[in-house]
Length: 153
Image 1 (cartoon, one colour):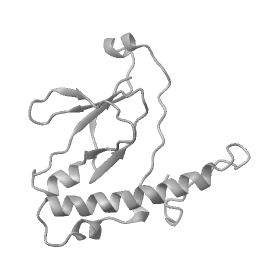
Image 2: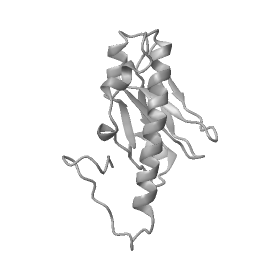
Image 3: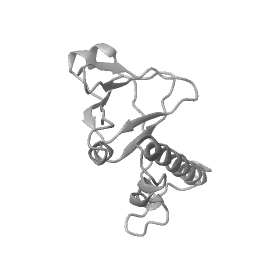
């Protein structure tokens, strides 16, 4: 889902009678994610040594964000490991950054750009994972590396 203010890509909502309160929850959560993203972008600007902590905000807007609710039904680990089934295969995010909330089951792996080894992103209660995307990796001239990630279980 995206911003309800984006007329070019309107959200299509399920009826409230099907899932009462979902639209209100989703819009509220979307707004909170945007607030968090602004804080992260300010922190990144400071960490990169930019003079203006709001510099990265100039290239982002609330209307251009996307919120994705993902559910992966259970599959046997052996089918994933054998390659018979796959989840969200190895990929990089083309955006600036991706904020990820995990459940207690985990399943997210991130490929270390230096060692090229896959590292499980173990879920931590109340923590938020941030993947650096291709755009921010390029903008920082490689000072921050984008990650290749994969969902396996």
